[in-house]
Image (cartoon, rainbow, N blue to C red; front, side):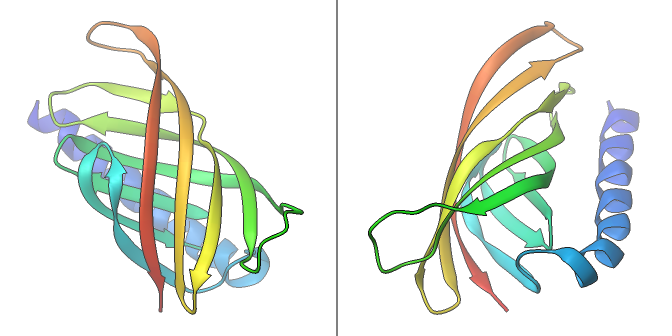
Length: 141
């Protein structure tokens, strides 16, 4: 169990480091975002460029947002849709891959909210497909 947690945290850290150089050049949103939300339980969400991470009371997740574009809707706030790919690890030892599909809305200066539907595949401890939901609010530093 401790080995799985250490492995998951090491992978998350490595993904964050590898995304830092990428985020500096071609990320649609530059800077660091931090906030709170619900994904792997209730917890803290962060974003750096095209990487989005979450650590909560049920586990951790990291996603790479590979497609993000503006939605043409009649609101005065910027609205974007996105698709990503990533992985998750729960504190009880479950590991899996996921494909978040969501929207984010910049509803105030330096604040945005997001909601996503996340198809996932757990590949150890009760292998199964499932559908998760995530949402949160972030502050852009």
